[in-house]
Image (cartoon, rainbow, N blue to C red):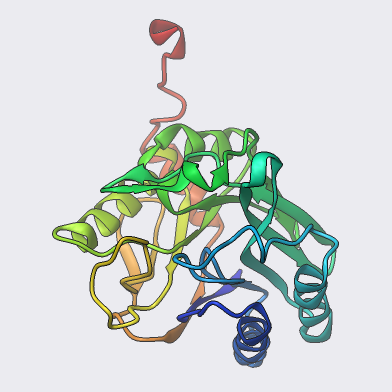
Length: 263
């Protein structure tokens, strides 16, 4: 399966960001990608008041993504903010395109490194997998990468890859953690892990996570197969789906689990 990771930098304006989604999706489609993955906060960057911008999944921004997916014949995965109770929003991934219509609400909120996502964002409570051309893919968002249970749940649901969208916060050691965690989660679940983050906006660390770039594709054996730098760039990669079964036969971490011990 050919996928594309769109490592761009979004701003505070949803309409302008939707135009970026269209431009980058067309580039990915021209390169033969079947699935195009955009970062977390594709609709509007963090550091922007989110509640006034939030729209439901049948709102104009999500419908714009659907139109782009239909026009290009691709499945597009993009991060947006949907309304939640109490004046908060939900950090949502929309997956849409031919034969696919699903969403994932970020389960693990980024209350870490001096930032409190839960002040403005409500947590999700359910995993999501999608099927594209008979291939099952899990969805995850940013801080989720620190929690191996989610990725194993994708594998248990039949997924051979997880698509992870992020707006990774800058700071000492954060790039190294990003790669380490991506490789570890691929190994934990013996899945392909395609992790796309916002490109580095060049502003340095701030109170809200923005991005550091360095999107990457990790094989089910934990090796990095493709990686980008900090700048905006499109990464197109072919995932060998059959490799997952081969790795699981050699490395039986899923089969050898003993969850009853930890209950």
